[in-house]
Length: 323
Image 1 (cartoon, rainbow, N blue to C red):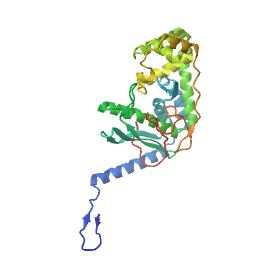
Image 2: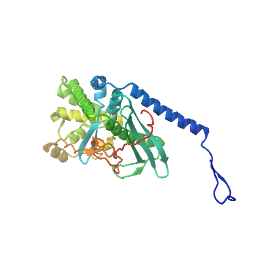
Image 3: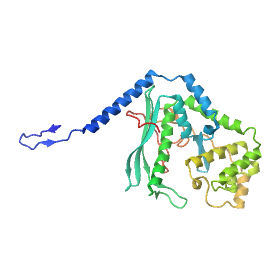
Image 4: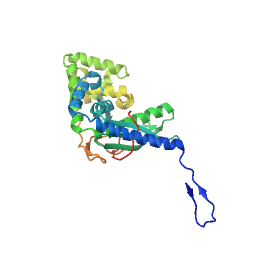
């Protein structure tokens, strides 16, 4: 393109045309999107088939054990459906593309600009979320400690991105489909453990956490009751917590304080059994208008200092591929 300013005797400024490689890439992306939408419209999903596949998938213990996450906040355990369940439901529902893209990394400001999105090609419902991930972490002694190792930066970005991808996927999936899958996963876990004596299940939980350097005393303090007082609900909660540790959703330091629990504190905890945390009222998603649960469990639509998901919003553009 040539731009000739006035007056006519002024110098001519030439702006380079887009390169041939850029034009080819733009054409390829456009054709890819058009092909994906065409295929989705030609091969529409069957709700009955999706329900059957969901019922089969969530009946597998390997998925059911990883279907939920748990992390502590303000003395309570926040729980919700995990990214593993979200990915499986997207696969079963079909005609959904989702992904996470790192748009920019600034090693001077210690932050990355990222984008998470999910797109139901058949319904033409799309949700995305552009957000900034600080290359920082909070420790017991200090907040906002910079992350300098490149591998740690990648893992931090992937962890934060997975949370938002999960919310995008759940935003395009029918809420009844998601809730049915969660209930089925809980039934699968309960069924698997129904014939195992409660004492054996308690010992199994303690043995699993021992591999993560978590002591029985720490588990008892967290559940606010001694080992021989643990109920099936306690065991289920600890199982979800262990899955979150194994998946890297939280760290051992975040789940369990480093400070030792004193005998007086233990007696006080046992004397005052904990109450199940009350579910927070669902908030409206800024982009889709549907109810979304809190941050990890989809209750906080905005991003706080600890980097939990902010509200997702619909828009247009090509998804960056499957994650």
